[in-house]
Length: 256
Image 1 (cartoon, rainbow, N blue to C red):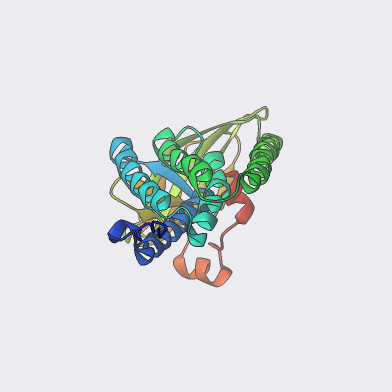
Image 2 (cartoon, rainbow, N blue to C red):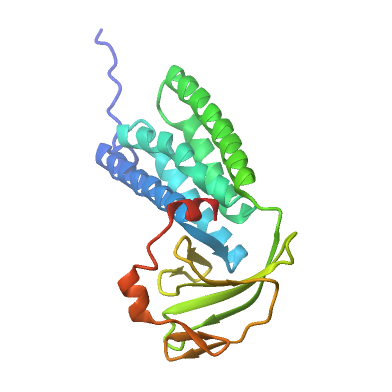
C-alpha cells in the first residue's frame, strides 16, 4: 500500500513570490519609521489635525502589520520587525504626549516583534536589549535635558514672516533673576515639511539677532527681506549668506 502524499499547497496565498513581495513592503514600512524617527529629532512635530493623522497612521500600520504577518518567515520581514522598536525610540522620546502618532506605530512594532518568524531565543535576547535601551535612553535624555534647562521663564510674544516668506522671527520675553530680557530670534522659513495633517518644523537653524536687557518693547519691521529693530537694520540676506548664519546646530535640534 502506497503511503499517502499530501498535495502541495497552491494558490496566491501560498505563492513564495507573493510573500517575498510582502516582505519588501515590510522593508518600506521600516524605512518609513526610520524617516519619522529622523524628523522627530531634527524637526518639531506639530500635528495640525490629530484625528486625521491618527487615522492615516492607523491605516498604514494596520496594512503593514497584515503584510508582515503574512510574510513573517521571510528574512527581510524578520529583520524589518526587529528594526521597528529601536527606530521608534526617537519618536517616543521627542514626541512624548503625541499619542495619536505614537500608539499606532507602537502597536505595530510590538505585535510584529512577537509575531515574526524568528526563534524564541532571538526574541528573548533582543527583547532584553530593547528594554534596557529604552530605559537607559530615557534616563539619559531626561537627565541631559534637565541639566541644560534654565529656571528662567520664556514666553514668545510676537512672531512674523518676511514678505518673501523665506525668513521668520520670534520675539521672546525671558523672566529671570536679573530683570529679564527680550530676545529676537531669526531663522529660515523654507525648510519646514508641511503635510495635510502634520507639519515638521525645522529646528536648530535659529540665530539670535539681539538680546536687550531689561525687558523692553521692540518694534519689528521688514523692508523687503531686511529686518529692522527699532528702526535699525539688523539683518540682510546677503549678510546671512556670507556669514553662513543658518547652519544647523545639532545640539539645539536634540534639546529642542
